[in-house]
Image (cartoon, rainbow, N blue to C red; front, side):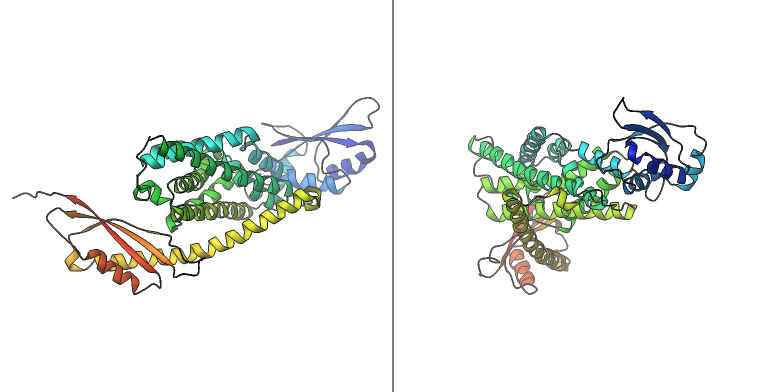
Length: 433
């Protein structure tokens, strides 16, 4: 249930009251002040009637920026309220939806003011960088909790689905700023960690499990962004806790941003490139899936703002549009490269499984198999790839030709020049006699 308070100029009062009477909405009028030529009209509505009523009132001549307050109330007793509740559902499709104004407000409230947004972006990336180096999922989870990216990542989808172009522009600015700050923060932290000898400078970070998990796009890591965007959007549109969905959104952003910074500090360009590809694709998926979820939930635009009212033709706008086009072309290239990489990773997983299921390798236990980006796509050289396979084995068994067997089998199904590394985890096992 919502209480609408709206300022109505005297010359529009008859049209507004006629509209309310047409839908049997009960109202009261209070004079705003002496000689102000306006009144305040109060009327209760079911949640699902709010957007339609505001749209009709705006069509009657009220300006879009008319002083309007929509508040939640527990109950109201008016002659025609029961009839209105029977006619309107509580949301776009069912009883748990929110009005456009509430949806927009809730998305904006998730993003702190600019200075705090920058601070928390940097802090969360620094904590994530430490968690990656420690190979600690608990520390990385802590970084996700303090991350401020939920609101900035979901506002664009909210703006797109309800026709609020100002929210779209603000969201893209916030997302770009947040990603730059997060990567810069992780890079600065990585420099301190490495050259402050908090970790050995010669540490091979690509061998750390948590870092390797976010060093390149993979179906499972992309799944995080795919469902995080949808969960965040539905949490915005309903009474579900948005903070939990915000952690899921951060899970797709913060570790990847931190991995980019660590790749830069440790002079691992392929790791940094793969993590950057994962980061940008995740951000894109969050925006797309959040939009699809809100659209499926029943939200539609009634042109609450006009794009021309938000964007003016000046030098700043031209630079912004040019930057957006550059980012767009970069995303297209990354999407193509990511698709090729996912096909390569799928081929590797199939080949590794095919080799290790042979009878002579029946005593081996596959722990992990992951691939890494290789150079060559943009340099004109033959594309390459790196495959690392981690295997558990009994300490008294030796397989000196396993890496060669895997390399030959993988090379048969891919045009890439593949390098295969096999790492053994030795263990002893004593069985009952």
